[in-house]
Image 1 (cartoon, rainbow, N blue to C red):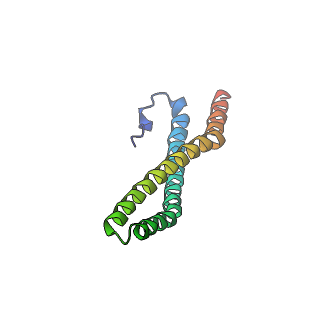
Image 2 (tube, rainbow, N blue to C red; image 1 turned 30 degrees about the horizontal axis):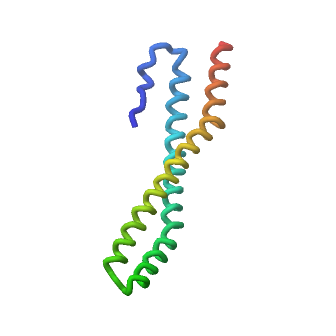
Length: 118
């Protein structure tokens, strides 16, 4: 991602805020990536067993038709990926929102209050 250059801030009084924003952005990105990765992996893992059962059932019901089983496998894979990506996106969004509300916003407010006292 493009991160703003902290040296672009001209007012020296704003430097602590710029540093805080860069640090908070880095922490938020790391937390969102970790949460997204975990949700995607969990979604794929959980959906794998029902997908295999579905493919097996299609294979049995169609009388050992490999073509039908392959089509079912491809559809199951696509559905698994779509659902896992949706879960990962939702986890990323929720993590960003929660971390910002619980950690970043209070830090920004306390930094602003500290800078006003100078």
